[in-house]
Image (tube, rainbow, N blue to C red; front, side, top):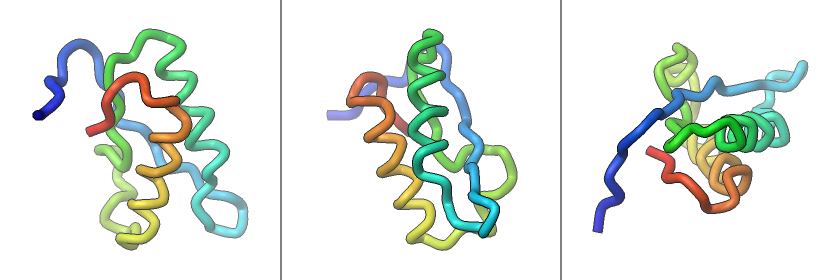
Length: 77
């Protein structure tokens, strides 16, 4: 069954470390901050422009970090 996306959603940025690696800790903090402030669903690798430059592995890592950061509350698109 699909989860309906209703309410306010946020296209999250994809933070990187100074070395250029995906910053998993920052992704988790961003997800938690959005949830704590009332966002109903999250869009990892959304429309902030970096998605075309990410590998499939980096996108999957970002999605996994967001799932962990949101503690299974609102859905992630």
